[in-house]
Length: 273
Ligand SMILES: [Zn+2]
Image (tube, rainbow, N blue to C red; front, top):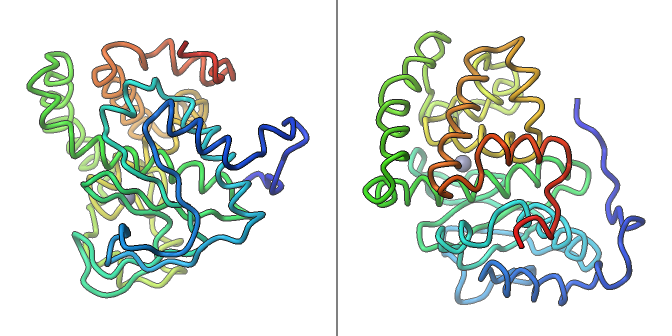
């Protein structure tokens, strides 16, 4: 069950925390990320068709983005090469790895570092997950290059990704659906058996499986690392794998200790100073 988080949960903020230009400037200075909320401009991807946010939603969406990005060490986000994050009210993509037609998505990552994230006023948790999900896609694109530099990451990728990750999915008995996933109705997607996976969307492909694990791990580590250890061993193993990936990519900054501290709410803005 999803916990409803009210829009502008600003009681915990001072007026300056809500100031969208201050939040944008903070994210640009610390992470090199340009945050966009307005109408489509010439820098936008042609294949991304979106509705801009209204003013109140954009203020809240930028705050929420700040709350999620501060979980990462600046060096990691800078290494991902995030150029911009555009927060939108609705997003459709005209083309993807698996599908040619127009389809509605919660977010998108382009290999040049442009990210799009849908702000769901009534499902802010979903928006939070999507921020990490799209960042994970950028990381997946960079893992090949990182693997050659970081020995421990190479080991994790090769031992895990090539062997056990697929083995885990085989043991769940549920194959990836590829483009078939996009032909299902929303109701059919919700009915998919996704044991061993975070959510129905994870059944699309190995990339989506990994990105949904990262999204859930960064927003609800206790669910994956404690609860799933008891009721879904496959998903628990995937979560451990993802901790190893973050650990390797950040040279130990985001390892087991970080995720325990994240679980307990100790990861705040001052954490990485
Ligand atoms: Zn994805």
